[in-house]
Amino acid sequence: MSIVHFTPENSQIYLVLSSARQFKENNMTVIKEITEKGYQAIVVTINQPARYLREYYGKNGVDLSRVCFIDAITKYAGGKIPEDMPCSVFLPNPADLTGLSIAVTESLKKRGDLPACILIDSINAMLIYLPSGDLSRFLHFVSSKLKILDISGIFLAVESGIDPILFTQLTSFSDDIIDLDGA
Amino acid sequence: MSREDIHFDEHLYEAVFESAGDGLVVAGSTSLILRANCRFLSMAGYDRSEIEGVMQWSGVIDGPDLAALAAPGPDGGQALHELHLKRKDGNLLAVAVTVESVGDRGIFTASILDISGKVRATQALRRRDAVLDAINTMAGLFLTAPRWEDVIVGALRHLCEATAVRRVYLFKNSEDPRTGDLLMNGCYEWTRDGSGGAITDPAMQNLSYQDAGVVSWIPALSAGETVFTDIGTAGDGERKNMEALGVKSEVIAPISAGGRWWGFIGFDETEEERYWAGAEIDTLGAAAGIIGSAIRRQETEEAMLAFITESALRLKNPVALVRDNLSMIHEDLSDGTTSKESILDQIRIQIANANQIAENLRMLNASIAEGRQEIPEAFRRFLTK
Image 1 (tube, chains in turn cyan, yellow):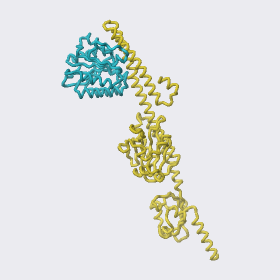
Image 2 (tube, one colour):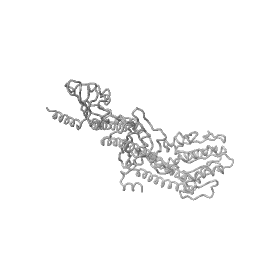
Image 3 (cartoon, chains in turn purple, blue):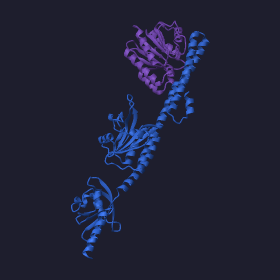
Image 4 (cartoon, chains in turn green, blue):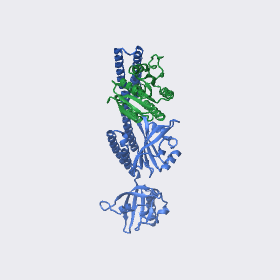
């Protein structure tokens, strides 16, 4: 059963909620589904290193040629930037929203003719590095940009890690909410 | 008695009549004022030629008061009547009048005492007591309401009724982001005709003290002092502002919240240059203090809620996230299918997360300590280091 229901002609922005226990697996399941639908997946990762996600996706049969990464945490944490990571950008600071916005814009430009879908992993990890007000403004910017460009997007979050005000704001930026585990 | 003696007595009585400290009037049977002394003329604001042999009692005493004058005293003798003298300039003067018939030709004398000072002081004391009652009611309202904004209009109504002024209003300060000028913003008001609510007039928003002609208020209000102004003594700028609003006198009491000058509460009188006793002005300052306390209490509660929410978002939940990630690393190490480089990256990220969580805690502590004068410096350093 498919999780997301967007098409190139009908882009959607989803807030996808997951339990903490199933989070990594749910991330992979969503990416697998959207790549199988023919989309170029652009994964903005703050929670896991891009190299780790790439390995994990690969082990689970995701078509890696359709996955790009914007990794905002590996470089910041002092990790080595892998050389065998095509279509990946490593940003120096997860709190640098300007840099992140530019990277998102550039990735969308590079996608060519393929329909694209952006996945942000995760709202909860971003909250370590950003005050909730700044995060809300950034996500508003991203959702507005995606709407203008008619591109689909997914905000991944652990529901129990979001306060009611932020949750309401995220809901207003999204077309629909998908609760994968009844979290 | 010789003619000279009679002449001397006439001069003597004339001198006593004219130099009396009270106003004295002799009136005929038709209530025509025959004689009035200097003090009465001064009280009424007329020249002698405008009164004597020209004016009836009804010219200087209002109708209802005139009827009261005819009432005898409790024992059928002289009665003391407190009523209002109509001055030539249209203002009313509170006076105490005693009337006595002289002989059987319908002539009577009236002694008039200016009691306006006593009346003002009595009114001021009554208003002070009424304001104290209003403060008591306000304190109850603020204590039971979750938000001061929910009950402030009711509080202003109580104050308006207690002070019997034309208008009571609340303004909040802000700063012009471009120029740094101090601005005032109308929030709520109540008027004597029974209307009130939020002030929505755009002209009352982001109004600079300079443009309102009241820049002179800033030093006093920021120092916690109440400002009293009447139109007769106001400076040019302030007078223009008062004239535009039809205000004759006003009291402006500063509102402080946690030691910060938050704004002010104003009391406008539009009908007269009103006498405000010192004790009365002090109670208005106390009313402003109650409002400031309510604002501060709510700010503190909101800050606490924001702190709890933000600390949950940026401390408690991130710790849970790091815990889950460490658990995942453990699983990855156990099953042996993940590369060493990926595992090391994961561990580095969790260390970075932990560092950031500690920094978040420091920043949250600093934001709380920043606005709290009551936290000793040593604790402040400890919390924010």
